[in-house]
Length: 277
Length: 118
Image 1 (tube, rainbow over the protein chains, first blue to last red):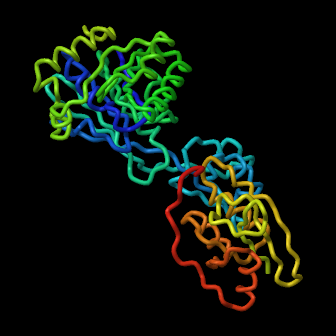
Image 2 (image 1 turned 180 degrees about the vertical axis):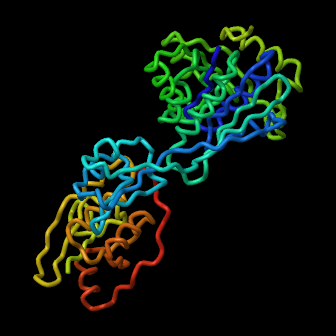
Image 3 (image 1 turned 90 degrees about the vertical axis):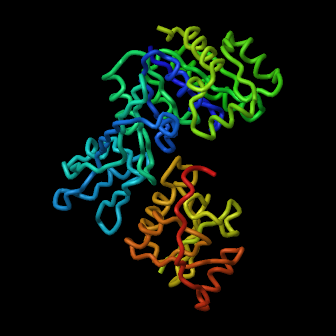
């Protein structure tokens, strides 16, 4: 079973939940798709780490064949291409490597070369295979690195926990493209609620079954509870706002390995989702 | 020579953003003629600075007067051999006057971009 852990806003507890779910499973694969800031490895401190570069394609132009028709410039919706002084120019960090410029070029003037955009690390923490996507700073899109990280995880199989990037953009769509279940980390605040609704809409749009974990709960927040009830969305767990939990997180400790009660709670959460074995 | 200035909806005030200005004012220093054109990059999802710079270059501009400009936009303008002047005046008219009186300085610092619609 593949479980994606998402939230609309950062700091809602995605990584804490994903790491603990993976650690609560008897054997699991943890894939960190939050490639701009992959933090799962800070908790797992994986051993035997190997890294593989992720490359994407970048267009190059054959000046002899280019007729200056600008079809490529017009096609590029990211505006990574400009045509100045009768020469096409490409802006590497803006290019999403879609290959479209090569397809629309009527004179075959576009060639492609590869360039590194990040890497996928693979290591182990006890029974957890830890896969970490790392995007190079300044890159426009994390999608190629996420794709490579997911592929590395898919080759292992079994219980797989996908720690998604925050928000509801393309990188999140890519991260949950193949999950069987979406676990939504929600914060009981107006801001948290707004972003929670956005990821919920996305998960529904992609036809994914969802469940909610309310994190950092310091009291009931009726709008969130009402929303879940009205939409038939199960609230699987309410995690209280506790100093001890925050402290464990800040020290990079995995709660289920340090705290018996946490181990029971996350084991049960996994069973309710259906990934318990 | 043609000078391009990013301007606000009222077409008079200088717009602080180069890439996302709603309009560009083009002033021809030889004929004194002014034309306003909508900036095709104003609502662009990304790469607005690049697209705006392409547009300004395509209009045959020789100079841009702007409050600020991103690195990518600046690189395109540089490749097109378009000078980038710093305009601190509130109104485009005053920027043009300052230009004609040789009071403008070249913009030398370019920001890293704001990535998306602000």
